[in-house]
Amino acid sequence: MSGRVYRLHSTLELPLEDLQDHFASDPELPEGVEDVDITRRNNTLILKAVSNDESIGKYTPTAQLKASVSETRVYEEEPPRTGGGWMQEEEEEIPSELVEFACFKGDRETVLQNTALQYPMFLVLREIALLSEKGTLTAITEIDNELRAHRIVEGEERPASVEVVETPDRNSEKGGVEWRDNKFIS
Picture 1 (cartoon, rainbow, N blue to C red):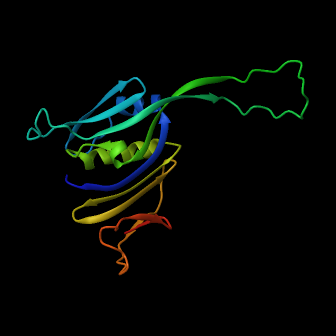
Picture 2 (cartoon, rainbow, N blue to C red):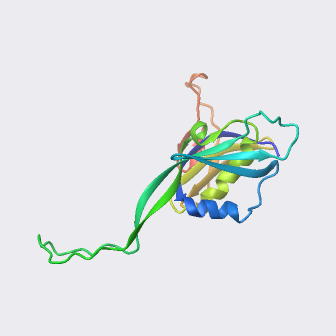
Picture 3 (cartoon, rainbow, N blue to C red):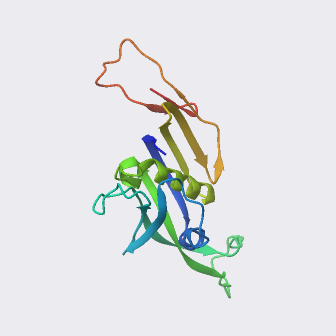
């Protein structure tokens, strides 16, 4: 499967445990990806594509997804709102736990690195976005010579489109793509 990722922006966050459970359940991976190697270095998580294509050399860097890992305190219930007294005799402690989150935040070069198997690893990121309850993933990709817009918000796929327009007053060197009205404008 060949394809390209032109634009990508992600603000996805999901519990690290959910991400690990997803890959432990042996998910169906895109064509060209035999496995995803997950490595953690301090507060950085790297998900690297393992190719099933022998033409990709042993030392060729395959695409990888990069996330930061952060701890967030998650409360089991909302704290009660008190009516403004300065002193309370006994404050009840609300049950909570520290949860590690994998945060895929940034643009293409930050989140999706290297070009070998880049499009299949984008498809892996799309699956992660569908699992995520927080954040968005927007992207422009090309497959079979067709541009496609992707937009996933808080785990739900939303409509997106690509519109290519030519503006006579735009300098060709300044050209670019911007996101407006739920679509990318070039």
